[in-house]
Image (cartoon, rainbow, N blue to C red):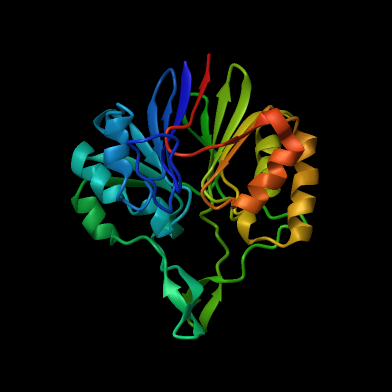
Length: 279
């Protein structure tokens, strides 16, 4: 049995759960238990308890990228689990910024991982840096750095990093997704899809040699795209024969409505408590 359960997300599916701007998914495979992202840190533990998920039994953590709403729960997790392997790109520890309105003008505000590496390692984090497509468990792959090939997926220019010349656009080399090779086909779990969802799915197709994708789950970052990019993305998604698309976090209501109009019964929202089971 393969089971993916959303543990942290902006919205909830029923009473007793807590929402926060962030994402985390609990992945149970026949061989391993993996936590993909950790949310901000406010809801990971209480939602896991409500879902009867024992975080102490997690075998490893994989991180989609270094923003606070995906990494902030690491400390709470390590407080329960103790020493654990954390699989990610080394850029996950970099300073990250986003242009935001402050007192009437746009300023770069810090949105990176809220913990220093030394502190996390002292709490049991055992970082395993990965930059390429890798199998991290039987039938479970992390995408590694995703080539940017589509002409219409331009990224969000408000996301920044800092170099010797000042603030520059964030290249998001650390934007990773998790890929499960299940009996029903490929399941792709997105963190925020900063690389572009079509770039990611094309990369998955290239690496696996499989054209069809059973399910896509997670944040698509389509809330921040132009209408033209959204239309091009929805059109391109039709090429993957996706049987189930369940969106969350940074997808946004307008983009979710557009996807529902396109996919109909194959579409789902994926709030806290949403589960996909494959056997």
